[in-house]
Length: 344
Image (cartoon, rainbow, N blue to C red; front, top):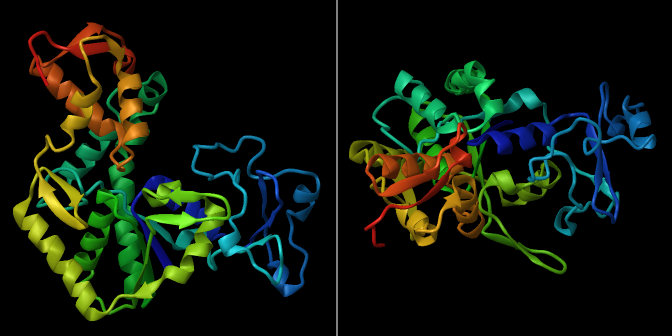
């Protein structure tokens, strides 16, 4: 089964979840110990290299592993809804290998979609959104970041080869605009293939033992949680695939600057659609740009990246609607405020 996702962090989590020899053990504490090894799995009754590391207390949540806040390093208690009652405390993972994961992070909710996803235009757009010269460490990796669009192009080529080989594919999508655009694009792009296509849609929320967890996109789901969502998988009928195919064709024909989810429908909108979120919090009192954007992301988590708000702020500065009070080499560190006379 080929897993297709539409964002970097969610694809990274899936690669961890789909390691054929990843086994885990969940305790009642905050950490799930994850062991990555070679050879056969424990179901085979064979020794699993890497088990010694677990017994010595090493896990993906230790050492040099990076934790981006989405549970990619295993720092999350195992949810009850996917606990295996026959092997209490043992983490279940998704069958397969990491190379069966495809990441199509084309950001298709933004920009001109009459241009092909693998076009120079889309590559330049992805780079301009991700880079923006905001932090020194990113400037040091500029050449690498310029290759991001080409990486997604190669991922699309890999997906095509999998389809030509007759592989089934499973699309993991949510109501985040970039993800829903990805779903519609893929159904349109593979209209000449008859491979079996199934989908797993991220639910709006989950009721757990003592809490309710709201989901915005698959990037919020930890690797050790993903297998629990497989019970939501459904096979797309020909009619459903055609519906998504036509949806994408209509969006391409309209070719609005942005695409957003409105009342459950993917709709083309103007580039100022999200601007009210900036004006709602920006005052004449100077504020660091990173703080402003962070407040927007924290209070309105609608799966729109910081880079979009940063690009809109740049546009307002050029128009004289936002004033730079104190500049900085890193634009996220500069102080900004509403320009005089701007009333919103």
